[in-house]
Image (cartoon, rainbow, N blue to C red):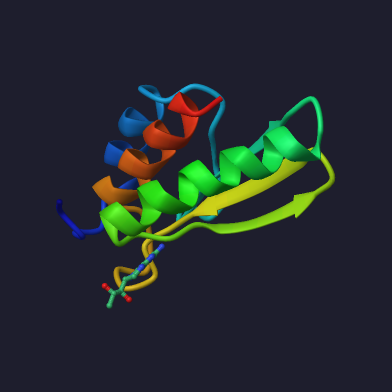
Length: 96
Ligand code: H2B
């Protein structure tokens, strides 16, 4: 999958295809807060997401506090957003 940096227009277009994610002010990343019923569900989501990330060889910047998981996606090698970020965002949405 392309690790080619998307311009802002392409990123905004891709963003419309995934629920719940927002573009950072600098346009270089997307983020979403996932909130679950308890820690166990939050951690199960992280486990599934981690396996999806490994498959894509594309990894989230994230943090977990109790039942919420904050995720930021960006392609560090490209210095911004690529198709990979949107592929991982879609995969994560499917685990909710
Ligand atoms: N994850 C993210 N989010 N951005 C990257 O640029 C990236 C990655 N690069 N996971 C990958 C791994 C790269 O370092 C390896 C060598 O493919």
